[in-house]
Amino acid sequence: MRAILVSLQTKNKTDEEVRESVHELEGLVKALDGKIIGKLIQKKEIPEPSTFIGKGKARQLAEIVEGTKADAIIFDSELTPVQISNLENITGISVYDRVDLILSIFEKRAKTKQAKLQVELAVLEHELPRIYGQKGKDLSRIGGGFKTKGAGEKLGEIKVRRIKDRISKIKKELKNIKRQRQEQRKWRNKDPNILKVSLVGYTNAGKSTLLKRLTKRDTYISNKLFATLDTKTSFIVYPEINKKVLITDTVGFVKNLPEPLLEAFMTTLDELYDSDLILHVVDVSDENWIKKVDIVEDILKKLKLGEKPVVLVLNKIDKVIPSKDYIEEENESILTGDRETIVVSSEKGWNLDKLHDILKKYAVKKSYYYMGV
Image (spheres, one colour):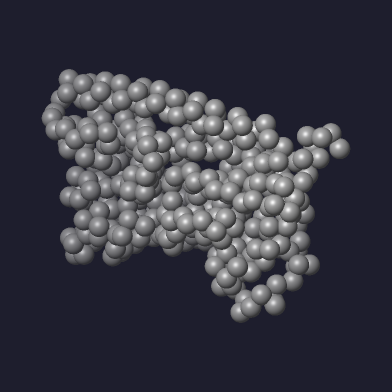
């Protein structure tokens, strides 16, 4: 993929917000091993209905495409079917929006049956409104084997019906998987000696590395956005207190994660509802880490998980300071206010002993709760 990135700075967006969003879009393109060969930022009070950026700017974009030999244009926003169709007619190459890009990464990363079904559902629900706008074009972006060609309203209706049938089937399969997982979790919920912990955080915050370090068990690690999609559960045994901790890694969040994507991954996020404790992992070496903390906390509130106990794990501190000796506990509250916080380096193993102590504390606290102490 040789991509040109396009962003529209509307009246309610600051220069900094646009820069941050485009930077994240670059990371998404790189996660697909794409090459960025140009960027176009258009200032406009509101999006233009037919081309999003305006016909004049769209023609300018076509000239950039011709000069750079780009094969894809990626917008840092959601586009309507009409806008995509018009932009592709003007530029002569494929046009994708932010959701298309995220879904492509999801399709590439999904490994388990559940993750693959969730991705396919999200793809189909995102593409369904675009069917009539495609006017018989190759629907290769649609998952589930619907790679067909044709023209006219009648063929469009057949495609819509087939896709709706597939969506219905996927939802039933996901319900069955959810039911099976609930059965598997029942024994965990009844045992006061098992503490259930979920890792959450912005994508690429280092959750998989932390899971591997804490449990000493292998998991896939990569320095790319959405490197892991599948829910992974591992465990730690603390024989000295006769407790066991189950730790589940969840899919990372991104800014402005579209509602359909959040809904499609609700089965994965179901693990959070059964958790006794949430570890919110943060890449503290990222200059925008405070904003990303707010993004994740907002998502947790939307999921009605705001009342769960949360420990903020400020990770990747080794990229900020030269040694563990520079970590000062009294500075943790300065950084994060009244949130329970610990500064660690999963990569170097710094302060993980103290994180283990926190897990033990909550494990013992759960036992006391069951005993009514």
